[in-house]
Image (cartoon, rainbow, N blue to C red; front, side, top):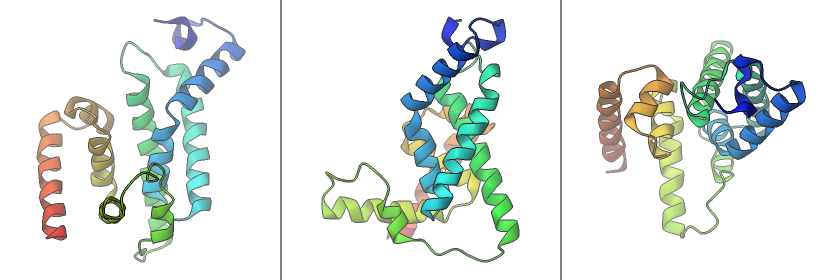
Length: 179
């Protein structure tokens, strides 16, 4: 294990742990932002979710074991669990359908260089993803992030075969919707 985040072995003090955590969180912050944009339509809710995910990651960081999984895989698992839990809690309080907010979707980064056609296609895909149930939404986000079936299975707690089946079905649903 490498010393910066081998917290189980007791190496490093609280400052070393905090520095290691901060560096890893900054390196992979795109994961947290992507999940927040996908699970919250309101900018304030997105910020709250980012904070909640960051707090839960900090709490769980002492148990992170780099020999068991990559940091990004571990981070996805925790971030998605927080987002899904928050979504379920929110939907229990509000038992109505939320329309897709095109302004929130437009706030997703990395669209600056896209053509108008690409931007429209991306907005359509994001709107479709927002309408998926929490597990399928997580599955598509991981798939679109080029995660392997093995990684997706590990993050979501399902088998790689189940991942492949679900992805195939989701692709078919998206093709049917677009057609």
